[in-house]
Amino acid sequence: MKNVLLVDDDSIFNLLNTKAIQQTGIPVAIHTTLNGQEAISLINEYFQFSRSLPEIILLDINVPGMDGFSFIQAFQHLPLPGIKDVKIVMITSSDNPKDVARARELGITTFLTKTINEAAIRGVLN
Image (spheres, rainbow, N blue to C red):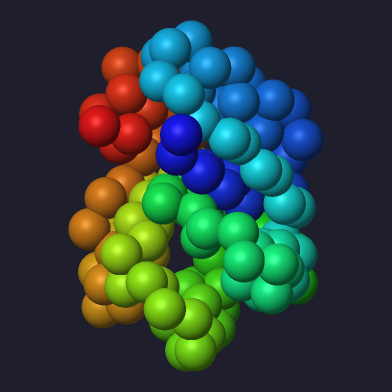
């Protein structure tokens, strides 16, 4: 079973994404947080209690507090084994080329446009 972490301040979006993930039929454990700081805390909790890190993080760029870019930078500096194996997928409604360029500079190679559908999420999970 894969662990998936959704990071988005929109609870409706988190619900829709959860349903899209479940509709794939791929066995996953889905966790949601509303911003980058909550996500970092949850990831530290995974490690502290010897759980596995999420294999995939679906990350919105524009969340309050610690935004998606700040989250990526903080995440990449966590001293956790296997952190480089975690795939971060940026999910955004922005089509700003600067956002894409900045994400690429941080090592993000996969982008999805809100709202994601079952086919898009299946591609990410497989």
